[in-house]
Length: 136
Length: 164
Image (cartoon, rainbow over all chains, first blue to last red; front, side, top):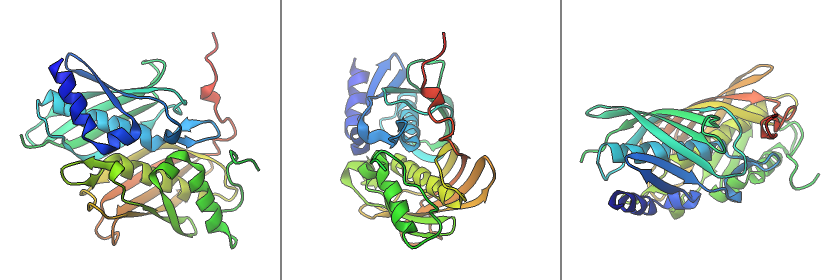
């Protein structure tokens, strides 16, 4: 449980994670970020649908947090670039995201992430990105 | 028009076009929460501002704003550029957005951005956007995005319960 506590406190130090309302769940070395639904996350109030930027931000946050866990580094990596594909509009319900570290090099890491809601097999968005690995 | 309806009209023309685009920005709860502002419009180009706020910091050691804020800002502004390019503006949905982060935003300073819809077709619009503090020549981030147009036609089709 020590890793979970460290992770929770690391996220708690990021004001933007608090702004979104993101929560971390760690099972072994696999991280799930949970974004509970909140009205201020909405982009289109007519549907209503979550803001695409918020879903992108959730996956980016998942990627850098998973990287910190995988590389056993308390410092967060810096984002170089991300590509976000939107697959379905985000319903006004809780959203989850997981990331897979494809490769960690000496300087650059390649990470993929997905966000989903009710069903893991029905992702609402996918992300891939490159990150500058933090020096330990 | 109820408060939940999107603003209608030809955003690119007319004296109060800027006012209508500003209404559109305020219509989005996440845009309001971030305090995003529209500064100027010109054809299919739009300029905006994301005010620096302590609650949006992504790196508590440096005070640099979170990358996610830039993502949302550029996505929002790019979508507006796509709407501005439409002859009959309706709603759009992001198909994909690619963002290059050149450097961290300067702590304590507002982030500015401009988005340009440089090509629009029947179904898809293509937009480029750049975020900076002083000049696009010294960018914080660059974005390239594609938008699906007229999403109101079958709006919410994916929100219906799946057929069993």
